Length: 225
View 1 (cartoon, rainbow, N blue to C red):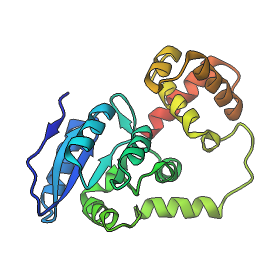
View 2 (view 1 turned 60 degrees about the horizontal axis):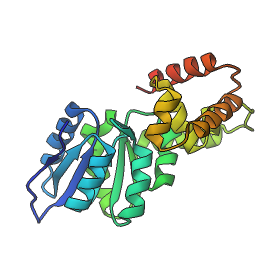
View 3 (view 1 turned 90 degrees about the vertical axis):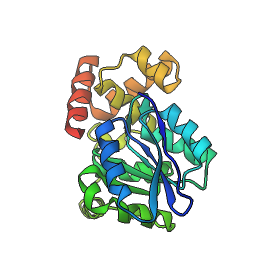
């Protein structure tokens, strides 16, 4: 899949789209194209290409999915935040907002919107983030508030929330059927480190075997789609 660069209009704020689904990118371009103050300057579905485009195009804002062809959006957000601190970032994902919105913000994103809400809310979200604000969709806010209101003392080994960001990345990739070696290569970790993460994940989730871990991860990944 090739990344694309689009002719810029200097009077408009520029948007870089990072999503691994071409149809989603086309949909976003269509919606953004209707805004008089915004223009898409580039698109890609890969982390490496996103970093290259951010350097070459210097966009005002990036829309980033959490599931990318060569990794996940949280890692990309952290890299872009470190290299381009002025770049605004809006996560646009199907993933569970109650779990990922806070992690995305903590990683350096400035907003989170569910893909179901793109047509009606993404322009407002982009404008708010470009104005220096944090954007969370109404559903995200409601879920977070509800979570605080019903928060209980955590039970060891019971919740995905207990996983660290790195453990969540490993768990995510296990759910996609990746082997320990493949996970190590993708995350630039040693095989031993990935094995350590797997053991910690099993302990936190109350699982006792590699088979249980695989089934649990696959089921969770399917529920997030």
